[in-house]
Amino acid sequence: MITDVEIEAANEQILLNPPGPSDDLLREVMQGSGTYVTVQLKPMLMMANTDHAELTEEEPKSVKTIPAHFSPVAQAEADDVARVFGDETWEDGRTYFHVGHPIGMEESPVCLDLSKFTERSNAIFGKTGTGKTFLTRLLLAGTIRTGRAVNLVFDMHSEYGYGSQAEGKDGQAQFVKGLRDLFPSRVSLFSLDPSTTRERGHTPDYDVHLHADQIQPADILPLRDTLNLNATAAESSYLLKNQYGTQWLTTLLEAQSGDDFERLADETGAHKNSIEALRRKLAPFQEYDFFTTQPSSDDYDVLDALLENLENGTSVVLEFGQYDDLRVYLLVANALTRRIRRAYEAKTNRYRQTQNEADKP
Image (cartoon, rainbow, N blue to C red):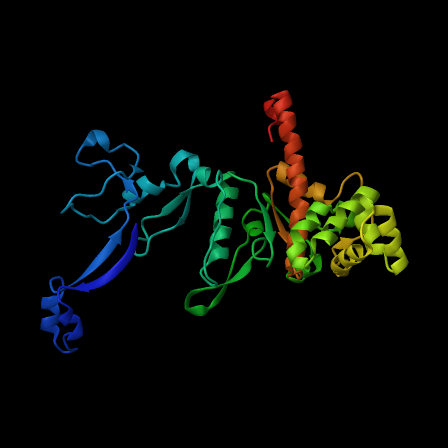
C-alpha cells in the first residue's frame, strides 16, 4: 500500500534554482538523477514466487518481511488483482462482489469478500461529496444479490429505497437506481412519511405508525443528551412504567394541569417537577403524524410486519421522509432494534433448546 509520495532532489540548490520554462534539456538531464520521487510503501501481502510452478497456487499471506534491495517491480495485471481480492465468478458468484477498479486499471476489477464483510462490523467514512451514500448502496446491493445478508436500512434522506439524484461527471445531475428498483422482490419499503413517498411517485409497502404503548423507558434514555433531560427526569420514566405498564407514556402525555402532575407524583413516587420536565421534552412527538397514543393492535402491527419481512429474508428500507430530526431517528431506531433483538434472542434460545436446524435464527 502506498502511504506517501514526495518529490526530492539530490542537491537543495536544484530546488532553489530550478531550470527555466524554456530549458528543456536541463530538465531532462536532471530528471531521475538530480531530481526524483520517493514513495512510502507499506507491505501488506506476500505472493508466491511465480518462477516456481509448485508455489503459484498458494494463497497470498500476511507479510512477514520486506523486498530485498534491487527487487524487480512489475505492474499488476488482472490475474494478480484477482489473486488478492478475488473474482466474481468464483464460488458460484456468492462470495466476491465487484466494487470498482484501480485508477487507470479499468480491466482489473477489485472485489470485496462478502462472506467476511458480513461477519464484521463495518462503517464508511468520508467528507461530504466523496461518495459515501453511493458506496453504501453498492455494498448493500452486493449483500442482497448474493443473499449474504438481510438488511434493515434506516433511510434518513430517502436515498436507498428508490432512485435518487447523484452528482455525475462535470457536475451534471443524474439519477441512480435504489435497492427497491434493483431488487423489487427482495426489498420492502416502509415509510414514516408515506405522503412524501407518494409525492415522489412511489407507494410504500407499509405505512409506519409508532404507538405510545410500544415505547419503553429504555428507548427514551439514549435521547437524554438530545432532549436535554436531567438524570432525575429520565429516571422518572421507569417509575411511570412500573405504575402504569405499557400505558405509561400515554398517561404522561395526557397530563395537562398541575393537579395531573401532582397525582402522577403521588401515585409513582417521582418528583412532580421531574415528571413535568419529562412530559415537556416528550410532548413534541405528538406533533408527528406517525406517532399516536391510540393503543396498538394486540394481534399484528406494522412492526410485526417488519420483523416478518426480515425473518423471511426480505431486506427492509425504512424511509423517514420529512422527519429530518435526530430525536425521531433515535427514538424509532431504539424502538425497532429493541424489538428485533428481543425476537432474535427468543429464537436463539429456542434453537439452543431444541437444537433443531429449522429453528435456527
